[in-house]
Length: 373
Ligand code: SF4
Image (cartoon, rainbow, N blue to C red; front, side, top):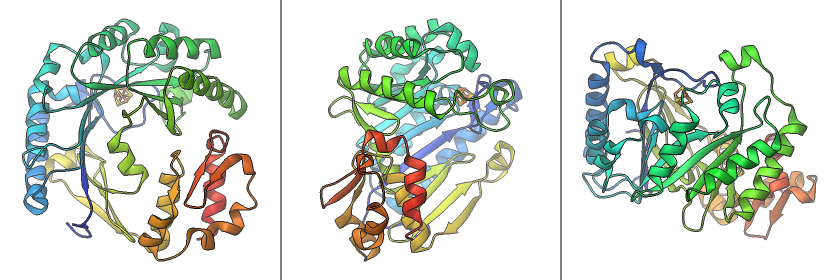
């Protein structure tokens, strides 16, 4: 694989492009079950297994992390998921292996993944039937509560996703969701505002609450999550001690990862990243997986790093920035940083990171700093 840096760890992402039906807010690439051609799931699995074994021939050692996401990976069935994990782990266990599962698919079959997956991520979104209806979510309150209850007794770490700032929802509703979901004991919670993606049924029927209202939902949710013992370590992610998602940290640190499956992205290299994307169409993927490759310049790589790392509470390690690009972080961005509101960031000399207040202005801050590149 072009640009692969053998000195650095490598992570693996598998995108499973199947869902039982489409949720109204979702713009991820996935095919609802009634539109999946006969035999497509078996053929998809064989292709992914083939891609993993080709990568293993080149890499030949354990992956740092593995993540099977979607879509809804459970649509493959637990046996196929176990087969994919066994292939990905044939050279040794990764430090973390996560599988996303929709609540209604969290059956006893999950135990097929014991010893193969370390972490399960479940898209709860809300436990309020009205909020789920406003979202047009393809899953129910009962299924979500049953999945959380089951997970709390199983030998996996688990994450629950929660969506906030949903039209019709009050701040008290989002706080009830957080409290109820946290009571099942997930080590990790993803908490984010509903986004209105172009072309989705949701964006045709309703509009966002607006920046100020969204900020009020976020501030209230962040405060409660912190009181419940979850550390806010990335704009939308919260973890109990030792439960941060290692795979996501690879993305945010602009580490190396290879993605397989329709629409999956890969990024390898260091000072200059090589970015790849699989064709975002099940039909062409099944005919022949093909990747579009872009060779980023050092400046484009710096922009990618800003975009990814400023999302985290760790921000940018200046010594690592120097190793990667051969230039000082302060020399490049210092003048622009001095013009930012000082409540938006922390700088202890070795790291530059945004505060929670800064997270609310993330896009603006990134745009301003990118002007120095
Ligand atoms: S289950 Fe997830 S990936 Fe599938 S349509 Fe719903 S939100 Fe999108």
